[in-house]
Image 1: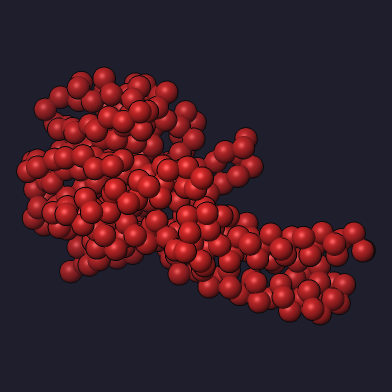
Image 2: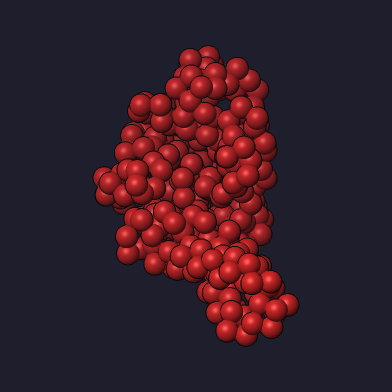
Length: 288
């Protein structure tokens, strides 16, 4: 029992670190990085609370309850359903392909979509040139992190930002800008510096903006909040894991679709054994 309580206190310490980091991620990139593990911290706090209640260790129970409540307050605002109404009429596919993936089936996979956002396109870049006139594309290369946008809608303008490719297209609702974004891994890697370069370009994009990509960050992160504020967008809800690593032992939600503030939509997740990232198939549009 003494060993179990010792492990419980250690688990609670880990929970406090991850949950506190998620709440304070705007203060330093290191905290934003640790906050990725918020859901694991919530799970640890729940387990600690159970152990404390079984052992009638009331100080541990009180601290576990406070930690759990703080963690849930961070996570629950982002745990909305995958679907909100109306679903809209723009069909979007978002996928990180993995830079080693030649994506030989790309033409078939994108056939049902108006807009496609891709990351890590390096090995699949030749496929873009074979899509034919029905799929205009724009590729922004970058050291294995190439990003691309494919559109079946008429293209008005296009460009590149730090870690992203964008197109302005003519949709039924009027001109819309679609951004394929790939952020670097967070601290101690280069995400914070990338964000410093990226945010002025995001603020300058023609409105309204749709952002889809591999953020390498979770819905509650400071980086996510900065991108949403700079593009005047909101994330489609849901906390499903979109990326697995460490042999499938670790699962995190780092691939997202953000839509303009008066838009809504729905999405489904599709596994991909080659990529490791799930593809997001979304249907979006303005709220009537």
